[in-house]
Image (cartoon, rainbow, N blue to C red; front, side, top):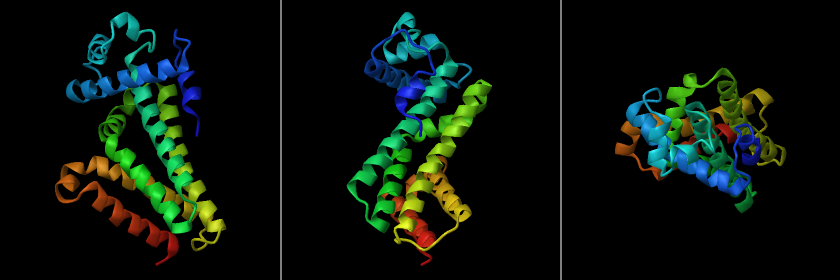
Length: 213
């Protein structure tokens, strides 16, 4: 998965400090998400985004050039959170079922924290220019690729039953989509299940597929 720094370079900035750029762009992203949800992408202006983020319009343009850049950065923020969460989960444990359960847990928690961001991306990806839309879809596949690598590594170590490449890929897509399902169905699920209940049930389901139990 491409690192955060590599992605940031794809959107030009006048600021030389990478950490400052990362921090300020996250402020812009979080402010823009709420506006896009409330007003819609097309009706939201960059001036409104700047005000909500606590920037002057001139300062905003030091970090992004357009609303489309902001929408792409929303996607970038989701992928960076997933990458960070999964990496931390793998650092905590390398033991078979426990390792996969930790990865699933961290991913689902990211989906829970960033539900608005994820829902927005699915609703507004078509608003992106073609080159950004292509990158968003590529990044979705990269996230699934993280799960493919984890599964393949654990199978090779003998922790799970043998699965062919097509089956591993399908299980990885299941993990990805089940995380997003909490976002799409939270209007119902959150009334009946806590996020911990959801994680426990879906983890048992995914581990059952992986182990054949």
